[in-house]
Length: 176
Image (cartoon, one colour):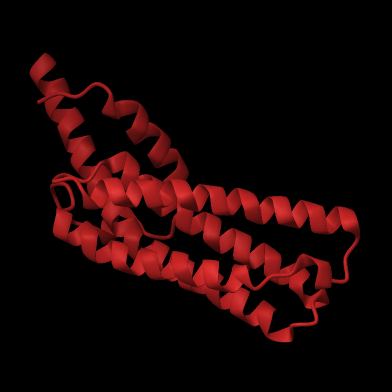
């Protein structure tokens, strides 16, 4: 069955994923990821999100030796990441409640792991001015965890994109 609506998603995802260390050669599989594969991977994603939230819940920007403006910017930075994670949790719920995982939802989850990593890493750099010296280490650990989960989850994204690409090729060959 030909789906013309998947080409833009495929193109955008390929551009985004071009810098990802998980290469297409590493995933020599055909077909979409199964619900079971995605559900199992989501357990790790859930852990990464919970860990990020646990660590960032402990941040008290007023204890950081930064200017008011810097604190305000960092608070907004964290708030934006948290809002994205709420949207990610909605995507995860849709994946869990569907028989066939949406590639777009899978991609949203994948992208949120990058957000966790970058946010935790960025906050860790500033947290050295905090009176809580262990916070920077926990933020960096949260970033590393998200990166590791992202590498693993990326294989599912590639599998889904490969399946879509095969679908598009089949559609094009039928049209000729």
